[in-house]
Length: 445
Image (cartoon, rainbow, N blue to C red; front, side, top):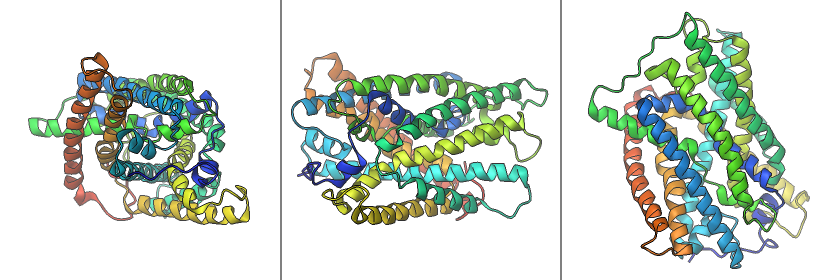
């Protein structure tokens, strides 16, 4: 059977990392940081595998389904809490509702893979931001991508010592503002690029072969799933001061208001300008290797700074699950959060974790392909399948009800999409293998 949850008085992960002190707007800040990140700069790249019509449809469907999914999961958490079974971890929620010990380990494996992947991606993209700024200041300078990744890792080691998820609330408010800021700047830059006399030629055609077109479409869907994905919603709800009922829904509305503004504007403006030549990072399309920048340098520079600063917040948010796992075993709650007994293990373990993520980022700079694989294998089962299953198991709606069949339909459709997305994403990873070089100084699309 699943590992029984410990009381807060024995559980360092709950007592220290997942402190339940937040208000609904704090949950909104956390949710927005967990979902609205620089991955939105990948949206034009996802559109190039789908085209205008299918791209809009998939973006909208993913938005509606994920909001519905997170809403259901919040209701399940509330329902469990009212019946005296409060859960603060995704793995414990799944194991309890489904009554299965193996589900506990399945969820913790998927969560660990997602959170580590996001942590690695945040460090990689932050290093790339520094590299872009450096290459514009010193085009022939000696520093390589892995040097910048090392710099970012050092900063993340320092920031990772913030002890609890709740202590990130002000950082995550800044993260929300940074996301709005760089979206406005990038959209403005794309409009400038598209209307200038140096505007790139536009081609919105898809792959000529039907099989290649289908594979590209499923890869793009996996990327969209990763962009909308949030594998830590129960942990975010755990940071709310009890009773948490209803508070998470307000946080979701805040988050999806930001999503609506940022996702559509970034996708439309970027794909409109660059079409099927869109890069996995639209900033790189605006700063081509050959030729002048396609927008004012100060605009792009400020956007890159905003992206860089937000990436630190994203890396911190997604590392919280790793920290609560570590401190559940390593911390002694009978002593204070900042006691020598707890402070030294925290510093050592979090430093080791960040170094591990930094080394992976330097070794494997293959962001576009890995993003698709993580979306298909990680986010689709965790965010598009499990919440519907948990709701049906916990609330037991009649099998003749509309809700039951909507949930079943979503599970079936996204199971198929996930399987195809995993196959097509891994296929692209294999096809691009000849471009992969350990400790490369270029991020592979």
